[in-house]
Length: 77
Image 1 (cartoon, helix red, strand yellow):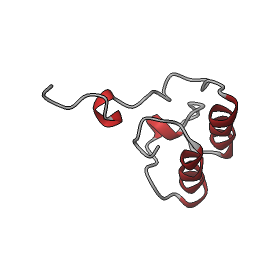
Image 2: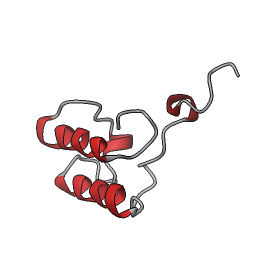
Image 3: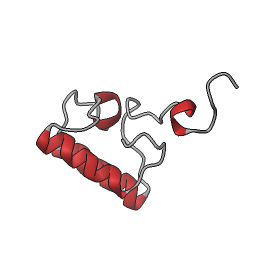
Image 4: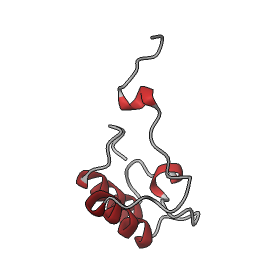
């Protein structure tokens, strides 16, 4: 969620902000990891499972960031 392409503990904090405060990068395509159409505490639990237990997200909407955003390739290369 912090657009670095890696799923880490700080991303869980950003997810908490999205769910409980409605602030931050709350795009459903990245934050709604259970594909319910809403940001809920369930999304936080699933993200915690992914970060700390390596469990996959249960839906296809939670997709990795494009390579350009991850910094793996530059536009025009």
